[in-house]
Amino acid sequence: MPTNSPELVDEILKALDYDGEEEVSSPEGEKMPIRLALLRKYQIRAPHLEFLNAMTDHAAADQYLKELINADVGTELDKFLWGREIIDFLLESPGVKFEPEEFVSLLKKLQPRLYSIASSLKAHPEEVHLTVDTVRYEIHGRKRKGVCSDFLAERAGKDTPVPVFIQASKHFRVPENNDMPIIMVGPGTGIAPFRAFLEERKATGAEGRNWLFFGAQKSSCDFFYKEELETYQTEGVLTRFDTAFSQDQNYKIYVQTRMMEKAKELWNWLEQGAHFYVCGDASRMAKDVDKALHEIVKIAGDRSEEAAGEYIQKLKCDKRYQRDVY
Image 1 (cartoon, rainbow, N blue to C red):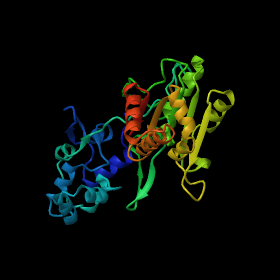
Image 2: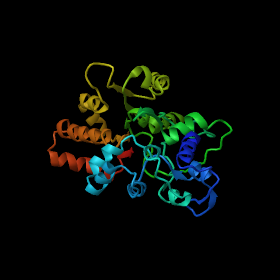
Image 3: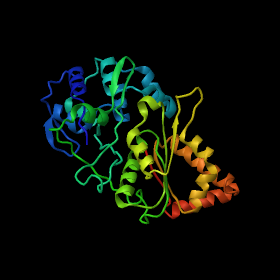
Image 4: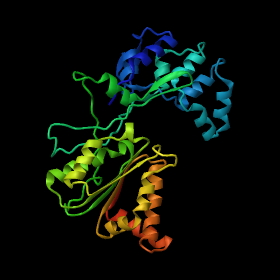
């Protein structure tokens, strides 16, 4: 559970001419100063429809925004909002003011950010490790930072309490049978649970083979846990290790590319009972990996499109195809 950027809170308070001590209600109905509410209780970056509608109700609001909302064309509105935050609208329309309670009523509750646990309790009994790629970029003339990644990277020091929200995963875990092989596909921070899987397999002395597909943009700066993974390979914990760095050459290579290159062997692993796991981006990577998996079953397994779909559906039903995507 992160807190928001104090600097961003100050900017919003200044834009609305608040001193920060005005009393407002939290999402739970608790009374508190608005500075504290914006810091800990509300989402203050992404503008939601309630806020946008309130902005368009004022004469000073952007007519173009009003037209986008009324047109009900989601894709165009999404394009316009990309990279824009609540503070942008407040600064662009300085004449628009809200009563403090009215303003927080236009905001959503600050939600917990879910990170896959990147360590095994058997390897680190008193610790939980996370894999965090800090979000920093500049757009529309302003520097932006991720809510939680910035909180963890820059503000959560050794003496800063970090409230924790835990969402248990019933099925995304190593097989109960330690002899079963596993295939893991985890580009970028999607490596997190598979680092935990490898720690777990080593700590329990699992005999099952382990195959990891890892991908990122550049090996020079995006190769998370490089030394650890290469050590696991040397030790024999990591049986197969395939990497795909999309920008290390003048043509793109992705994890699904590597999967297709090893189609026959991957199919053999599945036929020998391997569990198949995917972690990472849901919008593109997971879909592309799923498509590649279907192709592998169809081509290497010599099956029709329909039969390949049935094979993969059975993998899912048997809890041998698991995804942790976001």
